[in-house]
Length: 109
Image 1 (cartoon, one colour):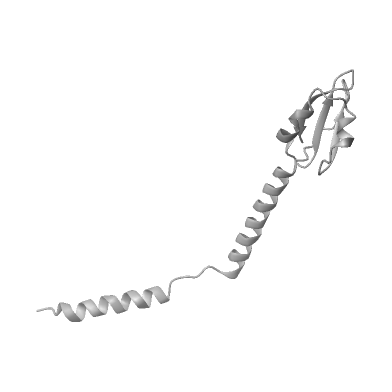
Image 2 (image 1 turned 90 degrees about the vertical axis):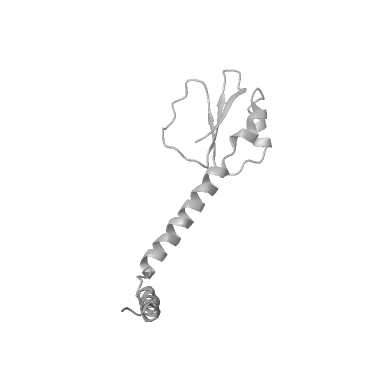
C-alpha cells in the first residue's frame, strides 16, 4: 500500500528544488533589453519632435511667417520645382511654397 501523505511531501519538495534550479535571465540579455527599450523611447521622442499637425494653420500664409514662429528642429523650405534630397529626417519640418511664396503644405521628414 502506498502512503500518499509521504508522496505528497516528496512532490512538493521536488517542485521547490526544481524551481530553485530554474534558469535566470543572463545579465547580458537584461542589458540588451534595457538598450532596446531606451532606443524605442528615443525613437518616440524623435517622431514627436516634428509635429506638423500643429503647424497646419500656416498653410496659406506668406513664407515670412516661418521665421516668426519658433520651430524646434531643422526646417526645410521647398520652393516650386526645387530639387530636394530624399533622405528622411523625422525631426525636420518641411514647408512647401507656391510661386507667390505662400505655404501650401507642411510635413515632417
